[in-house]
Image 1 (tube, protein in one colour):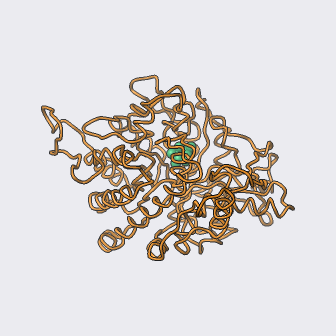
Image 2 (cartoon, helix red, strand yellow; image 1 turned 30 degrees about the horizontal axis):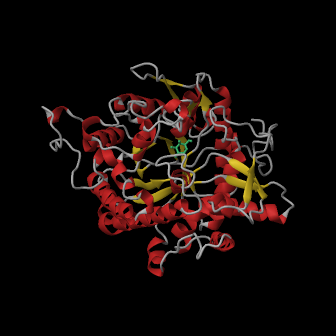
Image 3 (cartoon, protein in one colour; image 1 turned 60 degrees about the vertical axis):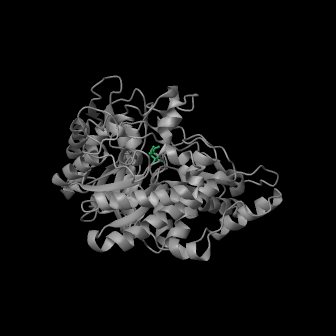
Length: 512
Ligand code: GAL
């Protein structure tokens, strides 16, 4: 077979050594092939069978044009009642792993273990409780049928949908939520941990903090620039670490599973690679996203030094009595350090970064970072998401960075994908090309950079409720017709191609 070009015409691929061709090699044995979803984005049944409200129910029901056409996840893909249809998609792809999240308030309607939403437990007046599906039973069914079909469940405890009752008490800015999360996590380990061996405590704490409590563009919509994100991130880290310890001390010996936290990050390149100021700004861009969480959890229990000094200096300039970045106690640092059994990475895009002098700015995380994002006009942009510049080689660099910075961990890419815009063509040839180039970069990371990469999960199995973009942005391997009451799932070309890669454990048939 002819060698792959060193760099493709649009500069999307990274170079390889010699004439090594990623199309010629297999993925490692036991490589985890997955797809991912999240409860609020697919389940619907927002108040079915005793489910309590989450912050996303509240946020979408309030309207106000914060979500495309004021759409909601009330029905979404209907997965709460259409699980068998999802299972068909999973089987059609030949996935070895499926990542999904539990809805906290579906399992525990008021957020606490005081009332468990399970068959036989009826909190409300309805003739026959036995007719209901109810939270625990629903997830039992999902987990059991995955296992019966040889698919490993990877379960996220928290994917943005905080029970509203906790938001009413301060949400992630409050210690109450940290404690409640631990009880919820323990409940899930106890209930499902005999069968679930891969746990992700929290999905993308950066997004929860930055978009939920700083910019207020995602639920719960809190706008506290320069303060809210740091405080909520602080508690998200404490909540994760506490839940990890609960697993470690109470469940690990018997259940023998693995627990981590899904961290998202862009890769960052200096706008002018020769300019030391831009180089430093690019490092700060990663520090204020990935390292913010990864340094305490994987290294030393504390925030990255650059982040501490940056926020402290900026706070002082603004006349704050102390740094706006909270501090962990020594005891907390010991508790947080080393609380991940693998590295769970969500990657979508890369940015070019330019130093920005923010001497006179108002407090905000963005200003603290002093790094301006510049989109490289030569990079294509995913049709359904203006923020998603397609840069497959950025993933390889990010993986190498994680290997070098975080002591060569086992890594799973727990999300990666490209959106189409609605109406989306089933023949998504160009999108598959992005996936193919990304998988090539992954092979280079594994075989050239020697990254311990153990699996890859496409975001997403299905077109779904894409947060503020509603149903206009389509990330699915399967198209969902949201105008049809049966919500039919139909494979895009990418689904067929992905199934082929999985069956071959490589990009071409020679690996079958
Ligand atoms: C991630 C998030 C997913 C999905 C994806 C695509 O940040 O975890 O829920 O929406 O982005 O935008």
